[in-house]
Length: 226
Image (cartoon, rainbow, N blue to C red; front, side):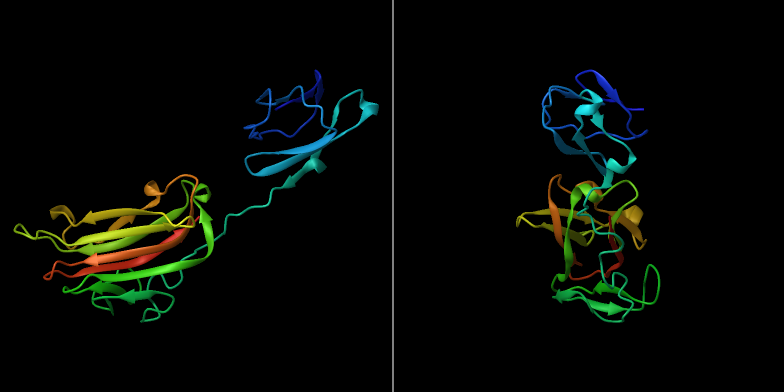
């Protein structure tokens, strides 16, 4: 149990909470010292805890379960990509350009996928209804696409997949991946979560498929779920 103290007077609080005490003067885990405001609040990992001054308790903080209130969250819930598997049979919810089309020939799941058949680079992108702070992504979250490409022992060897993650501040992260011999004509899970920049808010995801004039490239089951 964490104990919150005010001038060495202990007060009961809840068990198994993690206090975010950054920015608070002279604060160590489980303690508040030299803090003279009669009321206030601080954030826990998931909740916000509030207290009030009560002179009848000789300086103790008046803190109980009712003081634990949900902290307003900026994290959207559920799948944020619409039509991520192209199961509408078209590019509904996606913007697209270049040599890219919907195909039922190869798919990771369902009936359809999107593919580049050579020529110009094929591009698809989608802007989210709500920006997503990168801090919302945990080990159980997803930020991925399933990709399928071809590889050759001679130049140009392989096609190139490029993902661009655009942030609210106008910056973006670029991630590229080429099909290797071991991944030739195999569906591969492309996890983009490790490339997210801390402290940013994601607003758009974009994929570019460059088949180098001679290869097929597919993308399917795109998922962004904090």
